[in-house]
Length: 356
Image (cartoon, rainbow, N blue to C red; front, side, top):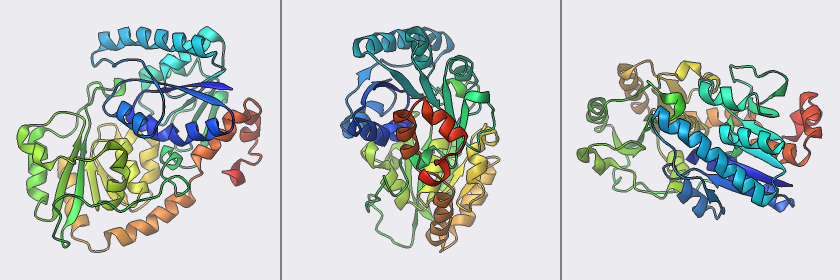
């Protein structure tokens, strides 16, 4: 089987990197097409994953509309040259449109309820949509839900071995470590949304720097006076640093759930936070917090940083999270190798609960 996998975001590299390896080992061939966004190409190269580029996306509505045609035509061209049998992605409208052109199956994963534009395009054109069981939308008969979240595809102990890392210039062991994460707000589902202002970022640092070392990871450009806080690491090392930190504060939903899964308390401030079923799911555990506003971020962070048992408590919560999750990578590999019989097997829950 020849599978075309469309990668549209750095997080998708992590979602599928072990899936690619597993399918290739089993005799399938995975052809990767990737959009140039932030560190996507760097991650693919770091993991030795060959890929075709489909260029850069656009930030305005007109540009996004143009890129939809360009990206789809690029995938159609690559699919033709590689005689693709099946399309796989995380919420890719480009794959969905290309799959119709070639009359081949399209399997899509998703966990973002308010990604309305992409839903309108890919949902009608997909054969199977896999989401966490907490996903708040219902896509009908083609919709299959799994236990846990996307994080289990690459952060469960089967696939992730934490290596000890050292943050630069953190000599005083009595101070905790905070990572601040900011996003670009350029995605289709981010239109008319915003997070921390530059003034709020400065105030946040001023409030918390006596209690903790502060490091910043940011998609959006920040003023020069904040550059000294930049977390200067290779992108493929981020999860090791997330696991080492005591607290993550930010706008990124993906990194907030990753931190919680790895045993680092996380506070997320995102205008759409209460729309996400995954956020509701993580909120059951005492390691993940949704902030209502900027003042709530400060209050929650101060309370957490004043405690000595942060990591100890988090470890117990991580055990619960993992017990409530399947191995998503194993599910995806099995599902594709056994497609289309796997649809009925999963829906009838034959093997499903015990295998993954």
